[in-house]
Amino acid sequence: MAKQKPIEVITPPNVLKTKVGGPLPALDQKAIARAEAALERMSSQFAEWIKEELERLLEAWAAYEAAPGTPASRNELHRRAHDLKGLAPTYGYPLVGRICASLCKLTGDEHGEIHAPDKLLKAHVDAVKAAVVGKIMGADHPVGLVLAAELEAHSKALIASQVQQQG
Image (cartoon, rainbow, N blue to C red):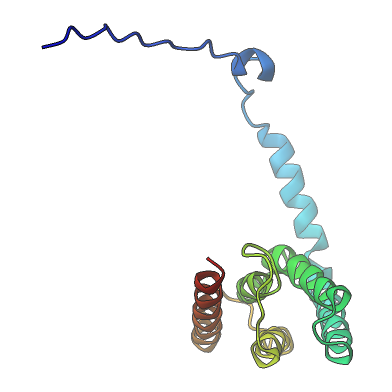
């Protein structure tokens, strides 16, 4: 039997702490309270702001329909969906954020160029419109949950099939 060489484990120095500057300071609870109070003061404007974001999404959809599949129209649709994905939960519309997250996946968020049927994209836009106009604000609205889950299921299946074809 051949003689084995001893194994040597080398542990590199952890310089991350020195780059960050040591442990992170505790959260400033007063700053958090001020931010929450500021959000509370602005909350009366959330209804108007979500309607403005919806209008921007609808305008992006109209531009997409006028020039389907062009990079500019697709990017604008994605941008508006992405904006709503982040803003809607803050404005009290978590289901809108969830639907927009699904729309973002179809317009190039995670998987690159996905060729989604216009009907599926339109269904997402219509669902957002229905939620905002119908003031479906809770994350537990029964119809909203079913709608979001159905849109996500169709999107997931489409993405999986296209990613598999590309791979």
